[in-house]
Amino acid sequence: MAKARAAKKTPIRVLIAKPGLDGHDRGAKVVARALRDAGMEVIYAGLRQTPEEIVRAAIEEDVDLIGLSILSGAHMALFPRVLALLKQEGGHDIPVFAGGIIPDEDARRLKKAGIRAIFGPGTSLEEIVSTARSLARASA
Amino acid sequence: MTGAGSRLPAVARAIVNGDRRALARTISQVENGDGAADRVVRSLYARSGRAPVVGLTGPLGVGKSSIVNALVGRLRSLGLTVGIIGVDPSSPFTGGSVLGDRIRLERRADDGGVFFRSMASRGAAGGVAAATREVARLLDAAGFDVILVETVGSGQVDVAIRDIASTSIVVLVPHLGDEVQTLKAGLFEIADIFCVNKTDLPGADAAKRDLAEMVGLGGPVTGWAPRIVGTSTLTPSGIEELWDGVTAHEKFLDSSGERTAGERRRLSSEIVGLARDRIGRELTVRLERDPSLRRLLDNVVARRIDPRTAADRLVRGRRSSR
Figure 1 (cartoon, chains in turn brown, purple):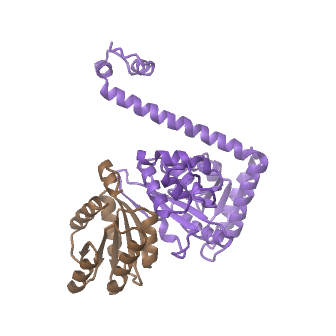
Figure 2 (cartoon, one colour):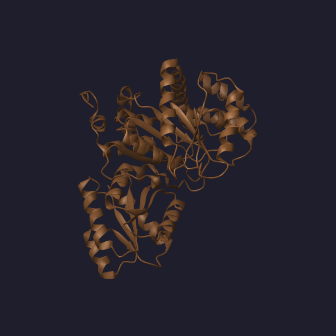
Figure 3 (spheres, chains in turn blue, orange):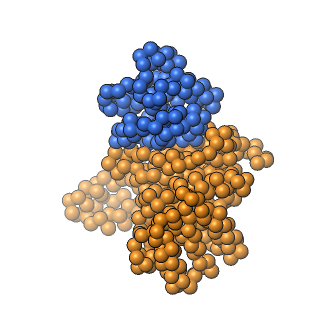
């Protein structure tokens, strides 16, 4: 799917969501805006999404990429759950990247578990956009 | 849904049997103009035309997404399944978009009776995307009982939903202007139902009164006088009445013969549009590839032939360069 899109230059579709109980969505909005300005179609699912809702949205919207933003500290519980559900629903080929406050040690473990990229505070938007683009183009 | 039909392509069969991933992927292919969906779309046409397609349009910020969410709740409580398309604008500058209609949707993640798809307008004018009609048809063929289509926040001339929906709801809020606004052509002409949302705000009664006065000015052409319903998604109120309005209009379409007439009108414009697109594409390709046509273009650029004469020759297939 994503390959066909890359070839035809159709817009990359990306889901941006905030899993769990976490009211801080400024970072997610900044990233959504940057991806929009980079020509992508951003499905903005917003705050307080359960892993089930996120995976459901990713399947229905047929996204090329999922971005999760988290500042609550619950990433070690919520991210692996999203990955497991994606696998279960046949969406294992959809790359997932993440941003927020995630300690280095956790980031290492999450990457091993299958999160493809993790962006901490201070990451440039250019880096996020170019990583998102290459992840979407390389998938499927 | 029984009898999936052995002659359907495998993907079409999967869609009819409730495979959400197959449905989602086919929708992407239709959006992208990908030829891979061609057979699927053709084969599923015969299975569409069952579900009412309810369009919700109106200016930005009037609460279309919140009303969609409330209607979904109402329809699910009636035991009806719902397919939803939420259209948001694409940037004319970058082609990018933020699709945010989904954010209002509250539902259980395991509720298989709801399918929500966000679409970017991708340069189409009129409030919907070029592929919205075919995507609505796919949701219909997939077996959803009701299809809801939410347009981009519309201006006065965005009436394309009329070509897709069997019932059009124009959503407004108090204080959008005086009663003369309701007389203006365009958006106000396409409403089967006017929904005055945010009735929790002051001014709602005046807005309803202005609309009622406008509706009363002209005798209904088809025998249907637009209903006016007040809603609030805050309290919430009026949602049952809104859905009752939709079912009343759908019943009217059947009893008056307007459904068939409307279908004929819509399909005729669709067929002509598809044919025009194809002829247009073929002409473009010919103009690019055919050297004699390139000479024709050269002659127009050099002011030896005028554009109208050149177009005549193009249409007649005369490849004369002179």
